[in-house]
Amino acid sequence: MYGLVDGNNFYVSCERVFQPRLENRPVVVLSNNDGAVVSRSAEAKQLGIPMGAPFFEVRELLRRHQGHALSSNYALYGDMSRRVMARLADHVPSVEVYSIDEAFLDLHGLTTFCGSLDTRARAIRRDVLACTGIPTCIGMAPTKTLAKVANRLAKKHPELGGVLRLDTASRRERALRALPVGDVWGVGRRYADKLAAHGIRTAWELSQVSEAWARKHMGGVVGWRLVQELLGQPCQGLLPSEDGTLARQSISCSRSFGQRLFLFEDIWGALTTYLSRAAEKLRAQGDQAHILTVFLSQDRYDTRVPPPYTRSATLTLPGGPTSNTLQLLSYARRLLAKLYEPGRQYVKAGVVLDGLEPPGRGQQLSLFGAADDIIIPPADTGRTHQLMHTLDTLNRRFGRGTVRAAATAVAGAQPAPWQGKAQHRSPAYTTRFDDMLIVR
DNA sequence: TCTGGGGTCCTAGGACCC
DNA sequence: TCTGGGGTCCTAGGACCC
Image (cartoon, rainbow, N blue to C red; front, side, top):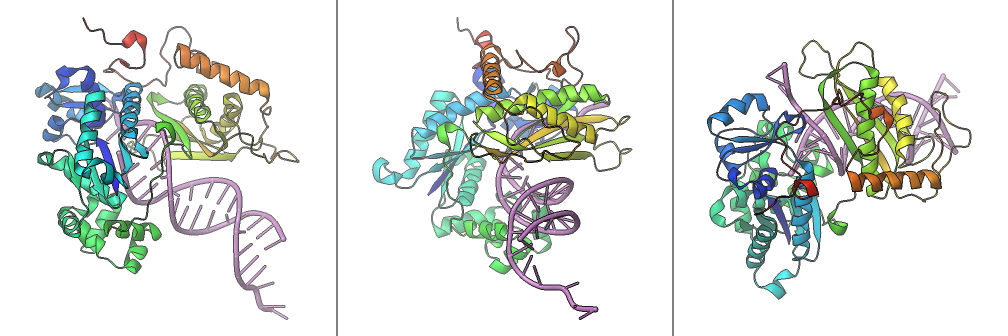
């Protein structure tokens, strides 16, 4: 039996813990650059504000209803997430951190010791709320996909008290018949449209298709697994997370710029910032990367710009895997030079690190060097590792960006040209001493 | 004026290899 | 004249998730 715990309106709930005045009114949290709505309180949902709505379209509506819009504060949400996950780990044998606000729980064998599962689940909710201030819902079922269904229903029907268990055939059928197929985990808009065209509108109808049909129309083996999970046959096990974090297979960092950029060096400054951040995450995970991708986007809403809006370039690092920011930067600059075209206006850039592995595994070194348009930067040495370690230590202690690559520097006290908007940012209550709440 | 960011998994064609 | 089969790697892109 699996459990799925999910924080209600997670980002909004994090903000409310420290700003009780936000209770009982419409509140939204905005994406980077204050561009779009990414989290909504129940009151904001009632106003009809959709997920992903551009802020400029709902600003007026919010104002009329004395609502609040906040810039996203990932330092706060990340820390609150760690606290929630730590509480969960105290209640069950193992936890899979699935996203910043969701975790799968291993519930096998729990009832023997602790009374009914429903009782246990209610105790977990109470504990998380008491210790972190975050309200949650918990769905329980024999498969992860059904646990997601149960969680969704628990959220939708507050009278259930935030907990729902779907472990009998009749409960399962009743739930699936009432669930639109587009609400099933793994069915996005494309598949929902396709299924509707075949007369399949509910999760129940999807669960009744044949293996051949699922394989043909739902992305091969992925579709068939989905159907089996709806039938109660587990196809996905729990992937326990070590110390509350999930080891990633790829690490990326990308941002929309605060304004359109067209100068190479401005874009390079932005890219340097993003790659530095990605490399920091890479080292924090204890890995090296051997594949680097750089991408650069034009405005996809500008009808004068023909697609493709995003161009990317990927390089398998000829010098072998590395986590050295300076070495990665030297590769990235060449990739950016391949993508950049003078005269075009760019709105966003980013990097992706792939092929992650821990250092020290036998590295395949190039015998003859690489293609001649690539100059291999100096190999990693003990000294560069020490340099990166010192860099990370300083930035952890004195704040992100205390020591950074010179390409990110801007004359005077000007904000960088790529800097995004964040006009409604709340303080980092739990991760900066200066921002700590003082109770008198 | 203003439309997110960070992930996973799968597919497919071409180059290249034996 | 006939011209296989089984791989990997690279690159790009699609679909999905929160």
